[in-house]
Length: 212
Image 1: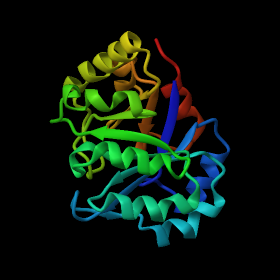
Image 2: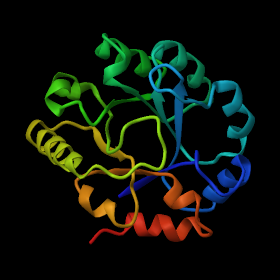
Image 3: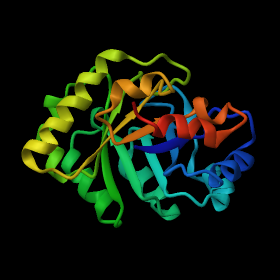
Image 4: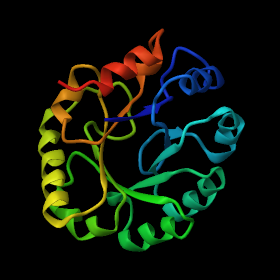
C-alpha cells in the first residue's frame, strides 16, 4: 500500500511539515489545489507552492479541485509533479485533458466525487494512470469517511483485472487507522491530519501501510 500525505492540516508550519515528511517512507507529497470556484476554498496557488516546494524530496501528487484545469496544469507542470489528477465533474473534455497532462510527460489521474458513479468514467479507464475516489465531499477537511464508497474501489479493481488496465486506485478523505482497512482494494491512500497532526509521522504512516 502506498501513502500520499496531504499537508493542509498540520501541527507544524509548511516547511517543517515537509522536512518531517522527507524523513519518512511516505510515497508522495499530496497537494490539494483549490480555486474557490469548483470548491469554495482557495488553497495553494502556484506562487505559494513555490515558496515551500523547494524543501520537498518526495514525488509530488497533485489533486486539482479547479474549473480552469488546463491553466492550472500549465502552472503546476513547472514543479515537475509525478502525477496530476483532475475532477471528472470539472470538465467536458476529459480525454483531451488526460492527453494534455501527458503531453508534459506527467502521469494523468481522474477523480470522482461521492455522487459520481464508476460507470460514468469507464470509457476513460484505458488512458489513466490513476483513478482517485473521493471518500468525502471535496474541498472540506476533517470530514468523516463515507463507507458507501468502498464499492467503487472494488468495482475499479474488477475492471482493471478484467481488461488488464494499468491505473492505480487511490482514495482520499477520512483515511486513518480504522478506515484504511475498508478500502483494501485501493493502491494509494491519501491521508492528511491523521499523519500531520501527530507527533510521529512515520508511526502513523506505518499504520496506514500495514494491512490486516
